[in-house]
Image (tube, rainbow, N blue to C red; front, side, top):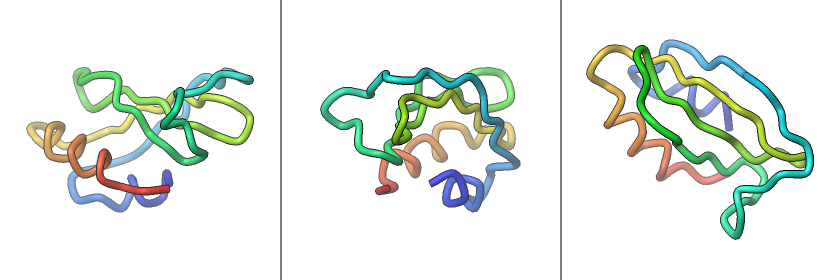
Length: 78
């Protein structure tokens, strides 16, 4: 899923952050699911569901592309 996010137009990179073992996104928490948590300067803060738990990610974007990229990510399927 991270490669698909990196391939979106306007995404300049993905930074992998802290991992939380044993946690889940809930009912929609299938492996590969991504939940955008908010817009931050320079990109989007998100979490993705892995087989072992949650993985924090930061999606670096071009200025002004955050909303469009967040919408595209919400339509991606794992």
